[in-house]
Each structure stands twice: as C-alpha cells, then as structure tokens.
Image (cartoon, rainbow, N blue to C red; front, side, top):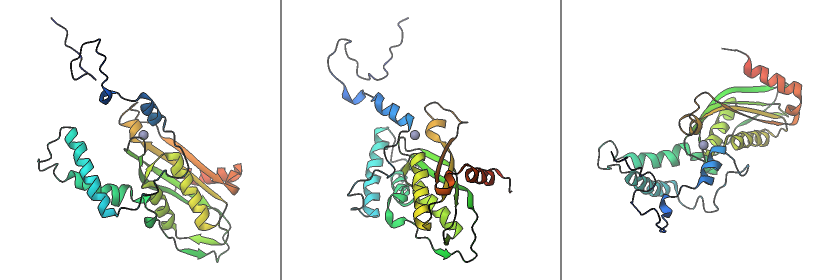
Length: 245
Ligand SMILES: [Zn+2]
C-alpha cells in the first residue's frame, strides 16, 4: 500500500527539488522560542506614540474587522448564528475589558488618607485575584498578588490597591513586568520607598499548550526599601502563608 503522503507545511504539492520559496508557510523558530521563554524587553509596556489617537469606539470597529478576517482565514462560517457576533464581542472585550489597562485614562486615582494613628507596622493586602494575558501568546495569566508596604504618613483605601493590581493586569503582560509596575505604582502613590509585592500565577500558554504543564506556577517578587531586609521579607511571607480563613 502506498504510504499516505504527509502534507504538513506543504499544502501545495511541489517537486522535492523545487526552488520556489513558500514564505507564507515558514514558522519563525526564533519567535517561538522568544515566546516560550517569556522574555520581556522593558519595565514600561512597549506602546506606540500614536496609541491613543483612535477613540475606543474606533478601535472596536477596526479590531472587529481584523478579528472577523482571522476567523474567516481559519475557515469559520461567520453566517452561523453562534459566530456572527463574535468579532464584535472580542473587539469590545479587548478594548473595554481585558486590555483597558493600556489606556492611562483608565488608571485608578486612589484616595489617600492621612495616617492619623501613626500606624508604623506593615500593611498587607494579600490574595488579590487578577486576570491578565501573556503578551507572547495572548492567552490568560491568572493568579494572586500580595502587596505590602510601610506608610510614611499616607495610607490608601485597601480596595484601591486591588484596583491598581487590576489596572496593570489588564494589559498584554509578562509577569515580571506586571510585578514591577505594581510595585513602582504603589511606591509612587503612597510616596513610600518600602514596598513588597509577590505574585503567584498560572500561565495558560504553559498549561494549555506548549509544554502542557498544568501544575507549574510562576512566582515573582518586587522588594524595595525595608523589604530588602530579610526579617521584613520573612514577616511578609508569614502573613501570606498564615491561614487566616
Ligand atoms: Zn505566553
């Protein structure tokens, strides 16, 4: 019996000695490796100078069109009742929800209070659930962020710490950058050098594809000022690990 011909990557039969280059079928291996290594390039989210020239509504209309094209290229029938509204739903979700943290207009403006009690101990807001998306694969990263600081005279509403975490999570991200961006923002908002952040997260690009590892979690940390001290770090970790439920 004639062996079944393997046509992967060569949908158009060509003689083996063909010199015709088929660019559209080349998968760039470097891109694959950079993505799986999850190497970020900078602390700032790489964003274009013209990022906000289009309004949210204009962005939604454009993304809707592009996403419709992606679905059509995949071969999906957009006239099906179940699929017909998907491009519009995805576009709105990108701009208004999961990537809304790209727009500085959506940055939380936290209310600050004077630290009237002269509370000098560590403040810890632990287990803040967040959902983000990996900038290399555009699939979810989700996990818990733990935020701690020492006040230098101002304190912040605890829900506002949560909002700062959500704001930076709602961008295409790498976990290291997310951790540093949250740390620097808490430092700046509270005008304190003493901030500790620990993030534990699951990356769907690792669990649902690629190496398909459903057990691994990724931990990252940001320690500034007093949090570089081992005793303070340990105190923070003890808070996180304490079973307070
Ligand atoms: Zn990824």
